[in-house]
Every structure is written in structure tokens, then in C-alpha cells.
Length: 159
Ligand code: FES
Ligand code: FES
Image (cartoon, rainbow, N blue to C red; front, side, top):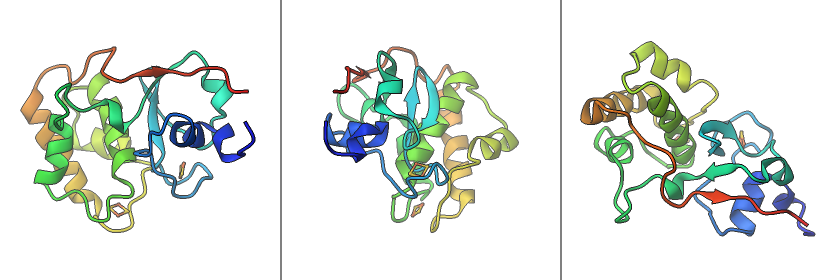
């Protein structure tokens, strides 16, 4: 592999697997727009070398919708609560909240806000995002997601 961006997990996902839903904002581990699930936990993918993720279960925003291609309840709630403007930060926030809801199906507002720490948004404002997560929580009232989920990928050696 010669492209230096593809050496990191966010670049690897885009350039090697064609998964472009994971956004890159700062590329320095600060904005949270590149969050993916690594072995079920949300992580910022830009500071992670692709080789470090070798053999791990990786789930991106492309992998969390319904199997028929529809949006899941959290994704729907983001639209219903107008929690998206430009959308650049949205996939990272949804992945972070997917992690939260998968481990804590009924989070308090405080827990939602704590879960959003490190997820920077320049335009929506966080109130709508919090309301979207609360709406999704009410919709499901059950373990939000189970593993393994659709379209997970296991990384292959990077050479
Ligand atoms: S692009 Fe990874 S944290 Fe900003
Ligand atoms: S919706 Fe634009 S940065 Fe968050």
C-alpha cells in the first residue's frame, strides 16, 4: 500500500473497502466525525493504524441500517428531530450513540450528553441530537442492537 492515508483505519475503510460514510474532519483525533465501532466499542478511526485493527470486528455507518436497506430507529430519529444540518458530523455521532444504546438501552439525558463528548458539531446544536437519541430510545425500549450485525467486516492484512 503506498497511499499514506490508507495506512490509517479511516483511509483504509474508504480507499480499500469503498466505505465512504465515515467522515474525516480534523484527522487528528479531536472532532469525532470518524467514529466507527471496533469490536463493539466506538473509537475514532483516524488515530488508529489499519494494522492495529487487523482481525477486529469493524462496523461503520454503512453497517447499522436494517437488513432491507432501510434506516434503523436511531437514524430515523435523527431525521425526525432535525438533528442533521450539513451532516458531516452525523455518521460519527450515530456510531457513538449506537455504542451507547447497545450497552445502555435507556440512557439518561446526562448519559447521552456524556456520550456525545468528543463529537463536535459546527451547525446543528446538540439539543436536537439529544432529542433524537431520546426518541430512538423510546422507540426501541429493548436492547438496541445485537452482534454480529449486517455488513461487519474483519480487516485483512495491510501490505
Ligand atoms: S477526523 Fe478523526 S477525530 Fe476528527
Ligand atoms: S451537522 Fe454540520 S457539523 Fe454537525
